Image 1 (tube, rainbow, N blue to C red):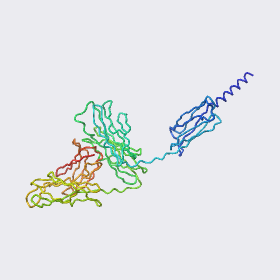
Image 2 (cartoon, rainbow, N blue to C red; image 1 turned 180 degrees about the horizontal axis):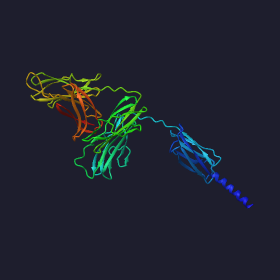
Image 3 (spheres, helix red, strand yellow; image 1 turned 90 degrees about the vertical axis):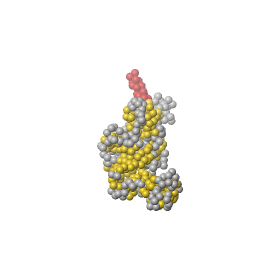
Image 4 (spheres, rainbow, N blue to C red; image 1 turned 45 degrees about the vertical axis):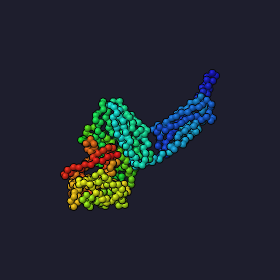
Length: 489
């Protein structure tokens, strides 16, 4: 009789333990049937119907297959469970599974959020830096720009595993030790445009005097659409100062990369979309620089926009011994445009504003004068033309002094932003010249060779790779060399 009582008591205790413990398991998948990784699942005993002493809440996360499992144990009886998963739109999915044994199963299906592709890049990150002390650097990103938008986020990576989020324009960074650090700035505009710029920062034990020149290498590329999904990239305008590029690392924005020193790779994309393409160059001396640009792949090749062109010009007519008439009717603009402003500088410290086409000017003394005409069109095209002459009392009129075979007529606009239109006049046909851009330290930042035709030659040069500051445009040929200064915003 004692053995029968003991066995009956063991059965009662087993039944009681089963009522107080429940194993909950299941899957969280999307509408495509794919398990969702690290999805939070909230498991709790429902207050309705449970014993007053049973109040338990657990949070479990799904594994790589979307599966979760948990065990709930209470002092009292568990009669009802509540399982909660958040849907992708923020709503709550709630299951209250029935269980007759110690195992309950609850599965969830959540939606797949619709991802809107980012708009084409209309922003450009850039920063300069100044050494404050031996290991302290002040960065300045005020020259970063957006097109008709505002920057809402700047994310800094200082190259020593530290970062700075928020929207800090000019952070002050103190490095723990000397070394070469690759600093990157990623900006995001209000409309969602993102762009990244990287530059090498060298920390030494002392402040160099004079301050170090700007980075001696600059990555740059342009691209041309060959077919609907095929792009030819060209990095020939990447420059180093007195050095050579030994490595070009391409990231094409679709997980594909190219690690050789390919100057002009041809890339075929699998589908249309917006891709953030980055090029990192390294020079023989170890200088590194990164340039990124957005590339949009569509189903058709868009026609190029018509260029906005204009050319200032004037002739000179002698009215008297020291009286001249300048006539700018030869100035031209593109079809559908017109000149709205002419600014004259007569070479004797006098000027004339407004829109005077043919002003008359009387000088006080015979001398050599250089007259400048700056024109502005209704569509914003700017041009400059100058002429040097000697004023004499002869009735033959003015005598040109500058008989050079090549002249720099204008740089438009000036200051420049992302590109400039250079107008060069050439006396002879098929004249070979070398164009170059140097900074104020004398370092060559860009160069190209060009064959000029007789008359005015208009050349477009991309200058977005230049940092802000003063530069010189140089034109060299068999007739000699000439230069003109300009400023980059």
